[in-house]
Every structure is written in C-alpha cells, then in structure tokens.
Image (cartoon, rainbow, N blue to C red; front, side):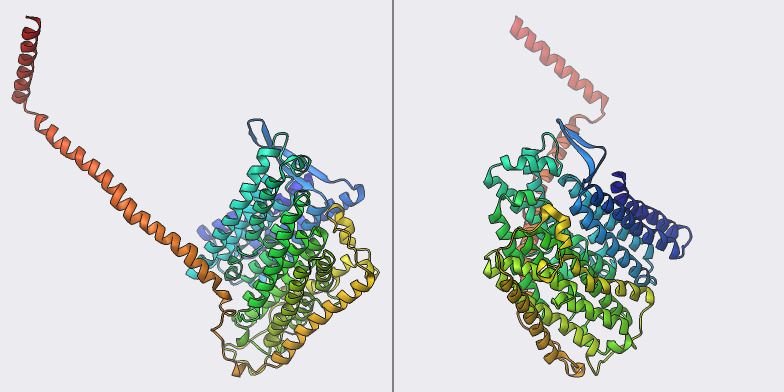
Length: 628
C-alpha cells in the first residue's frame, strides 16, 4: 500500500516526460494532433487522485500513516537521507484536493489552449508542476520537500513566461523566479541549522520532532523565521509578494493552478508541517500572524482600484493567504488548512470563470471593457456568482465557514488588532469582488471591440463542479455551534486548533458580525457598480492605491537599480580599469620580454657559435682566476 505514495508522484512525472518526447517528435518529425497530448495529460492527475483516495481510505481505516523509503538518496559522513514518502493525515488531505482540482483545471486547459501552437509543451510543464507539488506534500523530510519546493518554482517560471516572445512575460517569469530565490535562501538557512542539530540519525520529520526541543530557544526562533521567509516567497506575503500579480502573464489555467491549490499554498503547508517547531516559539507564530493580517489588508486595499480581472484575483489570493497565515501563526493549523481546502474550490472557479470571460471577449482582460456578460455566458455568470459569494463569506457558501473560524480564532486568542484588521479585509474583499462581478456581468453600454461569444462545455463543466464545491465544501468543517462536528478538524487531529474559550453568545455575535461586514461590502459595491455605465467610465491612472503604493518602483530603486549600478561599477571600474589593465599589462610585459629574448634567439648559426665561444671564454677566465 505504501508504494502508492510514490506512484501518486511518479504518474504525473512520467506523463510529463511522455508528453515532452511527443512534443519533440511533433516539432521535429510530424505534427501530432492535440489528442496525443490530451490523453496522458488528463489521465495522470485522475490516476493520482484515485490512488490518493485509496491511500486516504487505508489511513482512515487503520489510523496508521503510510511510509515508503525506496532507496538511499544521499549519504554523507554518516548522514543518510532516504528518498522517502509520508502519507499521513495532513499530506493525504492535501493530495486529495490538489489532484481533484488539478484534474479539473487540466480538463479546462484542454479547451482553453486548444488553438495554441505550444499545446504539448504547455502540458509538459503543467504535469511536471503537479508532480513537483505532490512531491512537496508527500515528502517525509524537509530535504525531499525542498526538491518539490524548487520544482514548483522552476515550473512556475516556465509557465508564467510561457508566451516568451513578449518581453514583459519573460520579465514576469524572471521576477517570480528571483523573488522566490530570495525566500528560498531563508528556507535553506533554516534547513542547514536543523540539519546540523538534528540530522545525525535521520532527517525526516519524526526525527526532527524528537530532537528539536533540545535546541536553544533563540536558535529555534532563527530557524522559525528563516523557514517562514521561504513561506513568504512561495505564498506571496509582505514583503516578498511582488511576483504574484505579474504572474498573471501566464495562461489563465496556470493562474488557476498556481493560485488555487498548489504553489501559493505551499508556504501554509510548510508552516503546518513544522507545527512541532512553531509550538515551541509562539512569539514567532505571532509575528507570522501579524504578517498575514497586514498582507490580507494591504492586498485587499490594492485590489479595490485594479482593472485587470486576473490581477484583482491575484491580489485576492494574497489576501486570502493572509487569513491562512493568521491561523497558522496563532496555532490554529486545522483552521488554516480548512481555508486552504475551501479556497481551492472557489479560487480555481474564479480564475477559470475569468478565463472563460477573457476567451469569450477575445482575450480582453480589462473589466471596464467587458460588461453585459450575463447574457453571453449565463453558466459562467451563475458559477462566478457562487464563487464570489463564497470568497465574500456569505453563508452557506464554503468561504463563510473557514473565514469565520479564522476570525473567531483571532478574537478568542485576544489578538484584537489582528482580528480588527481581518474584519476590515473582509469588508474590502466583499467590495472588490462584487465590484468585479457587477462590472463584468451587469455593466451596461459595454464597448466590446469584438463580438463576444459563449465558451465550450469543456470549459464550463469544471466550473459547474467547482461551484458545487464552493457551495458544499464548507460543511466539511461545520462547527459545533451550527450542529456540526468539524470533520476536517477531527481528521487532522494533531494539527487541530487550540481550544477556544468563548461563550456561544460571543460566537453567535461574531458570526453575525462577519455576515454583516460582508453584506456591507456587497452593499457598497451594489450601489456603485450595479448596472454600471461603462461608456462613461474614465480609467484612473493616478493615486497611491492604483499604483500599488509604488512598492515595485521602490524595490526597483533600492534593489534592481542599485545592483545594476554596482554591476556597472564592477564591470567598468574594477574589471576594465583594474583587472583588465593588470592582466593586459602583464601580457604586454611578457611580449616585450619575448622581443628582447627574440634578439638572442634569432636562428643564426654563426651568432650562436659566437655566443658559445664567448661563454666558453668567460668560463675559462673564471677558472683561471679562481683556481690559479
């Protein structure tokens, strides 16, 4: 049974390799029909999902985690690192919705990308991305996790810059890659310290958990912050979030896969996986919670002024990830993972719905150049409405239950500032999401450049499935207050939330307040943008919020330009004027010396005979005068 864990990772990997060879054959020998790439692309995530379900049921039945170590991966100085897979309740919980939502996105992508010349190459990257994410969550130790961690980073670069003929897309891919490398440096520092202290007998999670308590507290804090820096990069939190909006340069299925259930949730999963460490350093956890809170509010504020439909959703992802980090920072791991679960459904739906609208309008992404899409794509309209209600926190949709639980955790923990920031973020979330929804689907007098059309059912069918998830997924974590037993919390067990000491009256009051603030945001959006006259819209290009608080410009000034000037200084002043002059001067010296020696070494036999005679004469004179 444990072998299934390796197969869950290997099947998408082998599928990716197969698609890669087929693509090479297609571009060098004979062009293949899309069906050759579609079949392995769709079968791989489906097979991984089925194997994930089988593994999940096995763990549920026996209540024993699956563990598989097929071979020794690295052995250095008595340190043995095995290529190991761990199928416990946390990793299999992640595998189920990663593979299921990933399969739906793959199905959607077959229609979205069908006219693209790089169809085969796209699915080569896509399945490699999925395999890397599955390795990340199924790894039994942090070093094996890091392989998957870097794999999703590489694949995100390839997918974001997929349309590489446009230089802006290449810049966006480079930005994502470089910013993530900054975060990964912190991750590596944390892993190096852990390996030094805990890597003698083994470097899997169980071995680390047994030894980590013996480390000095101050060093644990360094490790906790270093690991979280890696999470900042992957999960786009302040200050390493700047790559996320630019990642929208990739095809929309890429945005859905990255933002819904895979790469950006890796940081949340990593912190939850190291819960045994963060429970020993609650002050670092509180720092994580504050970073999450400010990231949620910061992104929500920026989203209120954006006009690109995909960038609005990108900032909403950053904001929702902020809620997840509030939860893990306060020790409510199951609450964070519950929101990861619900977020996978409604965020994938939002991105795929946005992609359907973009295709229907011939690749238009400005929401103020859309409008009236309710009549053109009624199925997309209904499903997008359900996803928008879910992310806005309206019951009984999924996002309400998970977001309410996080807000309750913040309030019950006594962190009222975090709770207040999260409530403000909830108001803004409801506002900017319904601003998007009303403008795109209800806006009137739209000035469409091209005649809009409906999309195929291959694109709409996954939206319908995800709409059901956006409606019903929240009931998996129904709290006892509403008559539920929080199945997700019960399943996760040791990653469960801390006990909350609040009365039912307080819970009801907070629940009602959460609904009220969401309705407030919707009401403001309704008043301003319901039947919005797009013919009178004037695009605002001024203001600190519209320009995203000039953070990109600040980073460009502080880091990009400064490093560029330092590079130019080294290239011109040090390299040319110092290094080159020294080396060239040395070379010219050897040339001059060679010219002098060349006077003697002139290939003239009589000259050589004369030199020999002079030498012999000099030696003879020396012997005569010294020896008498």
